[in-house]
Image (tube, rainbow over all chains, first blue to last red; front, side, top):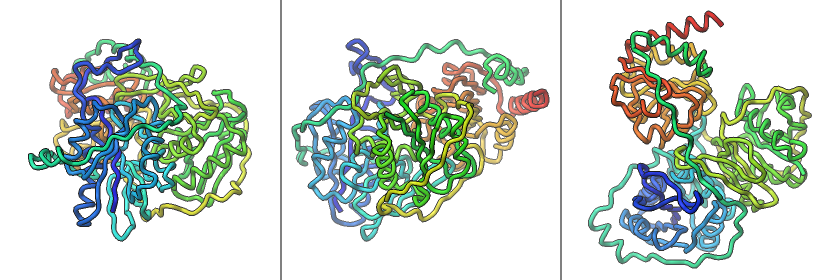
Length: 247
Length: 312
């Protein structure tokens, strides 16, 4: 089974959020960048588990980004991916990312394409679905469990108020949410091995950019919290009704 | 030029998020609005009140099969010369909208939070810690709307209903089982949410949380540790790795307010926090706060909610 994992680099969850260049760009100054948690903890680790269970196959990661993403990509190799691909581009739009990935993947015969459910910076959660469309694969977003046997995948996906269990034949694309696997910490052997695993840099092909993020802004500062003494807790309900007008 | 809006209307009544999406589509003023849905659906005529001229139903498609539904939307978009295609930013929309955007080479805005200014759409990024403006330059635009972003229009009129007569193609997925977890208000749609955390000390103590939610007409939610310990079902977990919600009112009881939890709830219009630790970080993100023991505060809140209900 040939598995492709879409891997993004994002600012750390606790990073200070600020923008630069007239609020057109995230200010990465002094910020630690990490592998997108949904890509790492769930998509990549589950891909490795499936390969290990099958006793054969390969796990390739693909990242769209500049040379500054290579430390993150090496971490993916240290966790256990067999090879990594970096498509050299600075994308401004999700469809651009998807087109670049699909152009790379289309003739490679991947059986399974796994993405995280969203990146924690842009929160769009659309690249997996776009790649699926461009590769002509079924797509199941928000999958919390994935089993594969004899070319048939059984997937649990989160839907409002419950869980849906679906089956689909490979090749297949899906996005991974919490529950699909447990985080793996790379060990020393993995880190050493990662140094010599192939990390191929692919030049970007020309793709359209039908949308672009043109400006960022911070939300207006929050007003001070109004404290209510515990003995008069009932007042909260009255204030939510008459002052905040939300109940 | 027309606007089409794809909605999931399976179930007993029309979801509020679907009504919001139709309202949004008609307020875009991009020509007549056609809604598209699938499966067994009822009461679709009433979408005329939100501005839909007609509703096209693919009754043969029963499940969220992203390939079939993409074919359906693309067929209608071509027939109606659609310039904008609206989705709900929910589990169904997330399956279909990106595919449609890729197929039509359309610029996509995922999770718009309000009306655009021209071609410029506003959305939340960095888990609600910042906002971004996305400009779409393609002839066709795909927009998925975050639930609870705009009020549902209450106009006049009935939509006409048509059956989809095209071929959605073969099903790529088969639904084996649907496990419903509770019959309460769906969390992403809820306008009021009562949420509780480890401060409740055990699953056996959730009675008053549920009672308060019932009195307020609220959905119940929980923090990650509570879901991880199986005190509450997984789908109730709000936060970075769980569900992100943006209700009008979020009441958090016994939740400290770690950054990962805030990421899922910081878009709530009003946040009320009850915690016995005055240093709990959640108070910094709150509009109202009570420092006190959950087991002493909750009965007072329930009593006040009952009194409010009796008065209105």
